[in-house]
Image 1 (tube, rainbow, N blue to C red):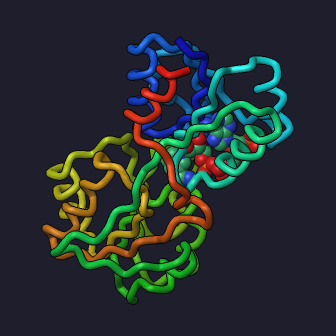
Image 2 (image 1 turned 180 degrees about the horizontal axis):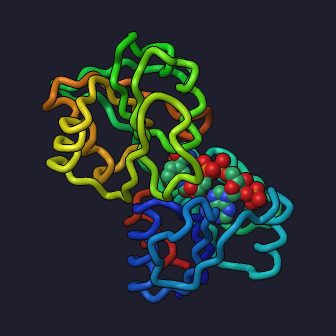
Length: 241
Ligand code: NAP
C-alpha cells in the first residue's frame, strides 16, 4: 500500500484514482478548482493551487507521499512543470499518466495549428465554429467578428456570450451520437479541438468526420508530449513500492 498525491482534473485522472483506491493505495486527489462542482473522486480531495513550485514542494515535504502522480490534462502545462520541479526538489518519485496524441483517422480532415491564435486565423469567413477548447480559449476567437462561435464549457457563464454565438453547457464524457446531433442542431461547419488524447474525448472527432466537418487541431504546448506511463504501469509501480 502506497500513499499518493494525485494531480487530477480529467476523466482519466478520476478513473486512475478509482483503480488506485481499489488496489488499496491511500490517495489524496488535488484539483485546481477550475470547475464549480467537479465530479467526485473516491478519496480525500483538496482543491486549489499550491502556490507554485515552492508551495507544492512544501506540501510534499509536509505529507511525504510515496509518489506524486501527474494525471493532469496535456494542455495544463504549468502544473506539470511545477510537479517536475517540486518532485526533483523533494526527492518524491513522480509518475506521469500518459495520454498519447491522437493521429488523424480517415475520413477526418485536420488542419494542424500551433496555437489558438492560429486556429482562429485558420477559420474561413462565415464559418460556424464549435470550440471544444475550453473557456480560456474564447478570447482568441473574439477578434473574428465574421464567424459564429459555439463554446462548450462545464459551468454556467457569469455573463452573456461576448461575441456572435452561444455557450453550450455540458459536462464530459460525450457520446458520438450526441455529438453528431449537437453539431447538426447548431449547423456547425468547423470543429476546433485540442489534441487531448484518450478514447473518451475522441467522439467529437469521429462525429465531425461523419458530418464532413473539418477539424482545426491545436498542438499541445511545448513539453506536454513528454513520455508518461499507462495506468497499468503506474499501478504496477506502486505495487512494487
Ligand atoms: P495550468 O495552467 O497548468 O495550471 C495553472 C495553475 O493552476 C497551476 O500553477 C496550479 O496553481 C493550479 N493547478 C492546476 N492543476 C492543479 C491541480 N490538479 N491541483 C492543484 N492545483 C492545480 O492548468 P490549467 O490549464 O488552468 O488547468 C487547470 C486544471 O484543469 C488542471 O488540473 C487540468 O488537469 C484541468 N483541465 C485542463 C484542461 C486544459 O485544456 N488546460 C482541460 C481539462 C481539464 P499553483 O501554481 O498555485 O499550484
